[in-house]
Length: 254
Image (cartoon, rainbow, N blue to C red):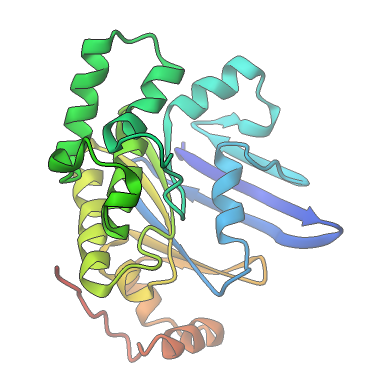
């Protein structure tokens, strides 16, 4: 049974279909990248897994449980398994990095202070932020803010992490370090990672599978090797627009 699954999901806003019959599944331990043009439903897709949005029709399943049909307690249990890295970081400017990372543990668990502090220290170390624990978000760089958001996403030891544009607005070197961190943490903690990204080169370099969304529909879902050599005209056009083609995957290294 897949860990995550969309079954013929339709999502409409004011009558317009942002997702139009989307179906896919994600296996445990995968790094699954969602790519496509702006406004095609990538971030909307992520939000369905934690029921920030509910489908107009169709089913969204987490470990076989239909999220949109959950009771409050069942939904809380599912959300407890999922870390979410928001596109803007979503850090509280009046709290330190360590305090931001501690929030999910303080608000959603009954852990004692000592254990919370230990988990926060572990998450900060894993994301290379131990030295920034006492700094405030405005005092650190955009890349460090992304890392802080990532530390908060993993501090509950979630087995599923959703990344919404983890490298948007970052310089190329910092973006490379974040991409490397996504891959490292996925392996270290045995996570399942779902990454929405505009960076097709990055997706090709570290994803287990890539799903291409366009106009709210799945154009292609395949391994990077198959995706890069696709004969689907829409995929070929998308690859060409990113400066890629001829079946080649350009590996990026930090």
